Image (cartoon, rainbow, N blue to C red; front, top):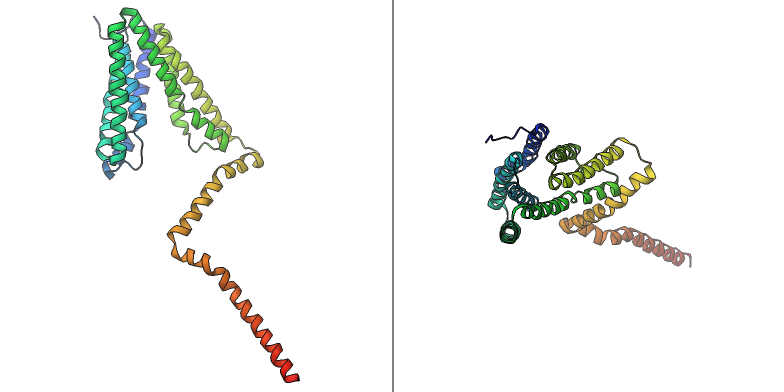
Length: 285
């Protein structure tokens, strides 16, 4: 039996392309974790995306074991499990105690407890094609939730009319990846692989459209700049005020005494003028 099934040429081509693109996506956090390893601190990074990615790769790997001629689905998700495990291990090594404990709880709840529960239920309560359909449905539901995560970024872009928090290269890569895996699913006639990537393609295309609109198209000042100011300036000005009053004793002292210092010369001038009038009236009498 050949390692790669090349009878379905299009499935082989799209699966190979999907492996290459997804391989690059899985490796994209390497600079981040190299910096974590070098500085011996996680610098406030969160572990949730990597825990979720590990759980997703594990689910798809389990689904692939129930199907035939999906070796390319096995390869990329095996690599995903491997690389995400390394990321999480580095995070646990250098994260503060609170973040480390939260990550361990997530791993126990989702990757161990959740996956073991799915595995046991599917193995003992379902057989054959029914089992593959149940696992495929779970994978689709979880993938839809993952693909829906960028909705918060889209909302931020529309509200602030700024693409600062939505890098175009990442959006483009994820959109291409969704298209390739969609074509792979269609070539295999596997709805469970194809369907979530339809949503991924739609959301990726929306992100790129918003990027073009808000990056290269000029918006009226009264619509663009004012909304950005309204969204950002109050929070920034409040933080600056807090930092100034809390961290600088000189500022506190100046704020406390400036009014009195400004009025003191006026009071003294008034008193001098009054004394001058009294002395002049006394001399006149």
